[in-house]
Amino acid sequence: MRRVLICGAGEAGSMVLEEILKHPEERIEVVGFIDDDPEKAKVSLHGKIVLGGRSKLSECIDLHTIKEVIIAMPSIPKDVIKDIVRICKAKKVRLLIVPSTMEIIEGVVHFDQIKKLDLSDLLEREEVSIDTEEIRRSIRGKKILVSGAAGSIGSQLIRDLAGYSPAVLIALDSNENGLFYLSRDGKAFIHEETWFIPCVADIKNRIIVDEIFSRYRPDIVFHAAAYKHVPLMESHERMIFLNNVVGTRAMLEASRNSGIEKFIGISTDKAVHSVSVMGKTKRICELMTGIYSGDGMNSCSVRFGNVLGSNGSVSTIFAEQIAKGGPVTITSPYMERYFMTVHEATSLVMQAATNGNSGNIYVLDMGRPIRIKDLAENLIILSGLTPHEDIPILYTGIRAGEKYREELYHRDVEILPSTHPGIFVEKNVSRNPLLMKMIDDLAEHIYELNEDEIGERMSAVVAEGHSSLLKICCNASKNC
Image (cartoon, rainbow, N blue to C red):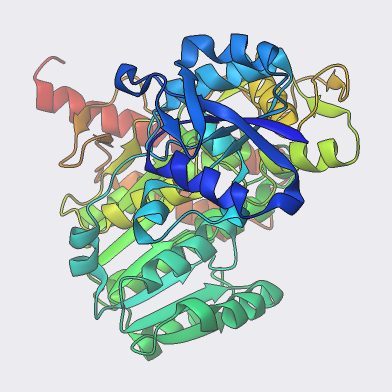
């Protein structure tokens, strides 16, 4: 028999016990409940009593030879989860969790819904809340275009946007296979009132991009298309400049010429004080988006950190390595990153579409960065294994273009609160005509220059852009 404790003696905990009792074939014996509410001490639910609060969890695991703990508190704070994880980690006890509060409200907890914890459960902050009605007013009945629609962020954006009833949803990507599967899956989540248009196209080709905008006349553009892998793209300056910068310029130009309502560009924390080629291209895209806003178009950027579970993300790689028995490879024990869930990322992007401030960069308050070493160890534990014993961890050394710690904001640029809690604004409007000249000149000579020269020119664009923004902030503060 699997001897189990349930953390949470409320409605969700009661539902979990009822479901377990319906499935004797699973050979699960619920010993009792753990709950911090003193009024529930010694209370009995279906014959199982509350043994004490969290302070008794470690003692109860030992006393009753517990093999599994089920967290049945759908609104549980992250610090409470981390405390339970810490105790179960020390006792080498398997952890499970019930669905979210919304899933509890919409129905009952079923046995097959009880799942393993995942890394998103262990983020050291609560997920950002969004104004869904404000987003609905912004999206409903509109023609929406998403570039990079077959990618991790783009495909989730398509799914989320579909829930707000746009009139037209254009999924643009050069990845034919990805669009095929998105189109097939879309039959389950795209409603009848929305016309879904998969569009195979290369954003670097301005003629094709212009043709798409002319044909479908989108109202709002979410630009998620980009090359993103830092070490890989360090030696491909030409290709990443063409895709990320030239492609974004084509999207911005077509958006302005067709008179769209809003352009939202998706950026990354690697654009802040960038050292990687990828980070420099994304910083240039942020600067261009600010320039176009100063040219009469309503455009902004959204910047966030690493997305858990996205294509090629470190968490996905770790999961694959653990499944093969290890080792888990980490560049350095000192490496830290900001993390968010894909749901948070797309929520932040959609919320930015409702804001009227043009040109600026919206940034989520992502709490403290997480050590990659801790993330790897937690993922091993969540897989029911012990770090360094069942799964070895191997340090391989920092790679080209990487920093030990990313930053969310430029240190010397004005940061303001937005109208939404937990979301901040970095000023980003520049009208420096030299910037676009430098970008266009590099694009014109991109096939004549070698990789090092391309990298140097990108660095010069980033430096010029930062200098012009500092002048604007200095003039605004009158503290030059």
